[in-house]
Image (cartoon, rainbow, N blue to C red; front, side, top):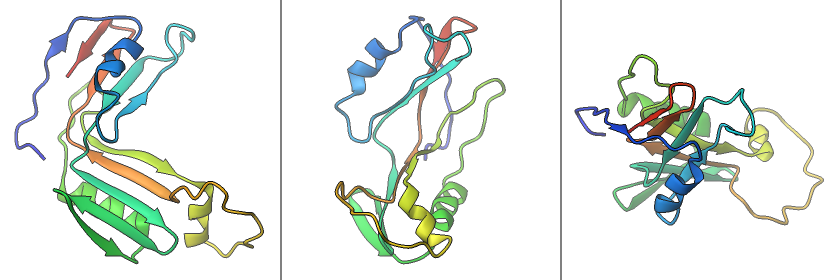
Length: 150
């Protein structure tokens, strides 16, 4: 993670989809869309890509990749994410919901790591039970303030 956090105001556009399109083809690109302007309840859009670290869990094994090197762990995937966040902290800024950290998903089947459940469904999709990136930058669009920061 970078040692110095920077905030830079950028021109505001109400539709962040065009902004995301610029980075959509980068590895692990993410767009957390607030739903604005179709929903007035949404405030922030968060856009990022190219995480410094990725954690991908299939069954009992989590692959942790950093700097192109992968290691495998059978430890609790939730603990592995916590460990990476502690080892790679991001200092917060007042008023911003995210400046870096973990973005990803936990699939329903990850619950099998927490409790014993019957295995009666077919795994037709073969998607990971968890896929989380540790991001060291983000573009945050604030629709209430009419600005975006990087």
